[in-house]
Image 1: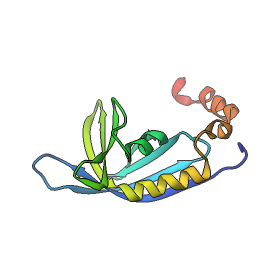
Image 2 (image 1 turned 90 degrees about the horizontal axis):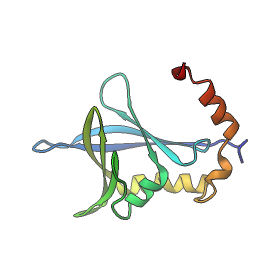
Image 3 (image 1 turned 120 degrees about the vertical axis):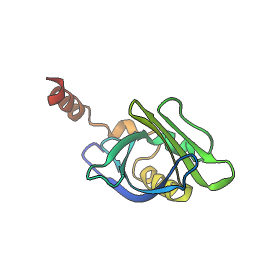
Length: 142
């Protein structure tokens, strides 16, 4: 399976929620790469020329569709009064943001990832040689 490679991309709109202000729509590109089978990358297009990148555990997003999940920097949960929405709360040293998005859109994207790499089979998709090579050749480590 390590020789196979699949990338799944899906556009989504997340609403940035701020106190006492209307929600602001943010375009987000969700990406799943079978070479990194445990993770989902989200590229938030905030209007500037560069995207804000976050990486989430795929299982965390899946669990957050059903019940509150996550601690620390990323928390995901269904919106209590609107089962069609899911809330993502992100914290970092540079700030804090709360987003809401369509649970169906996120669920459909995750479903496609699990069809590609079923839960429990992620380990078989990892290329340890490539990961080690990337780690050892990382220019940031110099």
